[in-house]
Image (cartoon, rainbow, N blue to C red; front, side, top):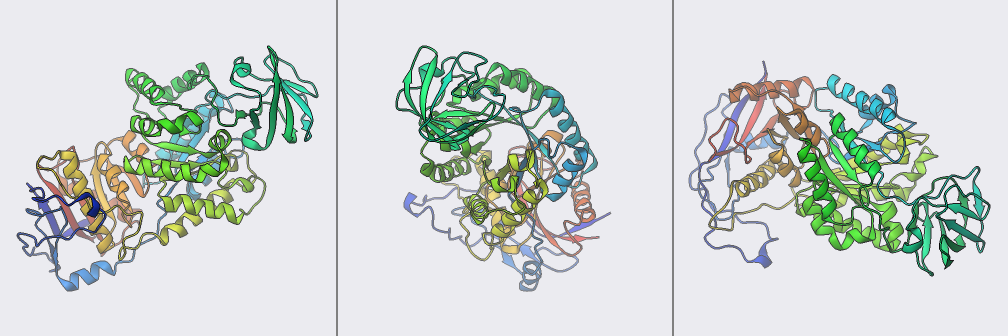
Length: 564
């Protein structure tokens, strides 16, 4: 059985808050720690020492006395590069077989997305069963979560026997009459389309692939002139520039699909066209009544959602930047700025954020990406997105595995330039202090999460955390440690959910009543999976709102050397 020799430990039974809180203007400055009240050398078999006592500190910063030989040995430890930014893959006709799901998982997929705009429950059931089969066979941390993406209140054109070629300047009409398909008129699936559209509006087809200007209206028809032509196929998505449809965010079909997700225990819902926080509360109330532990991710893609961004994300479990419809309903030049704002808002609330749509669009038909697409991935990673998403690239594209490989390698390369323990990268959150006389367990956890990250970055060690709720792993992910974060949990649902969070490798393991036995089994599993090797150092965190093997008032940070 593997064992880990403890070379240093931090224990705090009680901490005093700052006597003089730092002014707000200086909050961004690196904290200057006071001398630790007591530093006592800890004897180990290998004689390395690393000690600190957090009994008193003005701002929560750790000050440790280190044996220089031991410190050199730790910091020279090779850090194996693993991608931190997660990859969401949409499963469709190109990838819905057992062979392809296995290959996607081995190539880099972390979350399998079910697009309920396409397929039926039978086809999606097949994918769910295959993903669960893969997870059952792979217990070393390569976890695939399942995300169900609702269709939402989409306005679409009707069926056409064959594609209609639209030319610039041509007159073309949309009618609310069902089943109409002629060379100059097609149906739409939304009766209030007439009321939502005004003369002078610009209609966008498929997010702007074609556009038409509204010239006039009758009781049942919108008459347009083609601005940008193209080939109009069946069931194309329609938007009005700068407006959102007045349809409810969750339709009858969505509720059927949500129920399907509850029955199959999916991990996330991606909810389309969320306009305000009310729909999030409504869905969460339904899930609570159904006793379903499923997290809700709103897709920020409508004009109406932007004024309500803060309240939507606050009510949710994260967010998705759905740039396709967002760029159709709002000026396209605003999309990069809105993406950065949404990512930053999620990060400030410690919630995961996914950047989606058109990331490798050209790879639907071509084996290599454009250079602009490569830069797009890098920008999302640099902004701090937890995950980046592939849609048509993996659903119906010709090169799904190559697309995942490109996304993996670009993200990994970009991350390598961001996480430098000797500097202060923009992605790594700064250390936090306790500024109030009264503080809660969650505040104390934040402080320890901050300093565990600081220590792991300085010593260049991976972090191991044991969690029953996932909260400490999520908090550590928020601080963006430069090395891998191994989150051991005895809850299967928590393991699945953590697959979305940046830098987290979740591993399911039953905890024993004895802490050291559990630590030893965890190290043994990491050795077996070749995540660590003999002689490596790891930073072990015991903190969080829920106490495991410790008194509720104590928190621990330990550095241990892996032994066999």
